[in-house]
Image (cartoon, rainbow, N blue to C red; front, side, top):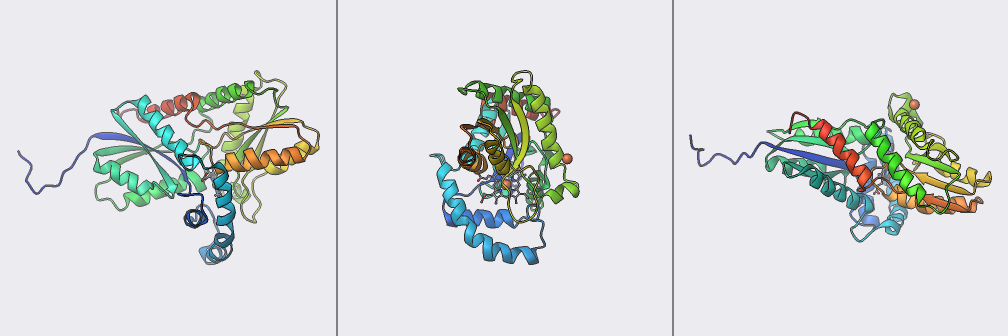
Length: 337
Ligand SMILES: C=CC1=C(C)c2cc3[nH]c(cc4nc(cc5[nH]c(cc1n2)c(C)c5CCC(=O)O)C(CCC(=O)O)=C4C)c(C)c3C=C
Ligand SMILES: [Fe+2]
Ligand SMILES: [Fe+2]
């Protein structure tokens, strides 16, 4: 039977993978950073203070002071392709696309800023993708990252008459493919250093400590990743100590400890001469790895008496990380392709 002339086009039958990361400003300028921070820090999954108390602090204090300081920090790491987080996430999507082939579409979106989850899900559906694997690139689950990304997806679906079927990539903090990708990648980076570090810090993004007591598994996920990674590295580098720390403290509440900056200073003061820092919880290098850890971390360590300091790269779009992502994604796509 021919389709009536006034029937809308209804493409179907395609499968997509949508990689998702946190988001970043559109430019390293105070105005763009302010717009980004206003959206990010108004998310009640991120700052769990009642809006009646938090919004006056955010609008009156934080958004009048932090954008200028953060914009300067962003300008130190901004590349010719823009923000490192966005540029690397785009490269990861391209690399995964060529690994998966044309039968599956790979795209990427950000929880805050651009490109948004809502616009990407709508565009994929319009082009006939009625099955979408939604993949937040956070190995360790937290309410402030994984859950809020899925919330944004739910809000986007809530506006659609004809929703695609959805699967979400589970956290992969203890997946053998993730641990071995990290171990292989860090081994290669450590072997390129002129001298091995005495200590390797595994620095994860922090969270308020109370989230642990409220049942967020983030802390346990980070500790398990750190333990498995330390076990994988121990036979290769038996002389090197491996410690876990938490970085990027924000606000006045107590955050998970030990803090990375405090530990870097304490190591230098205690006589450690050579230190390296890896950040296994970040899928892509970003402000927090390139500025806070690579730049500020070095200053802190050298000022405390240390002699050599190396911030190691995240998995980014390198071979070990992309092979891991391909295997995680193929596993979740079973039955769809
Ligand atoms: C990897 C996991 C992350 C967790 C967990 C996380 C929690 C968290 N973050 C803030 C506040 C800020 N984070 C900022 C930057 C930022 N955070 C992550 C990842 C996690 N955050 C990334 C990848 C980035 C980098 C973004 C980029 O553009 O490169 C910032 C903005 C930068 C700044 O002004 O310092 C803030 C603010 C909180 C409060 C929180 C947990 C509750
Ligand atoms: Fe953060
Ligand atoms: Fe724990």
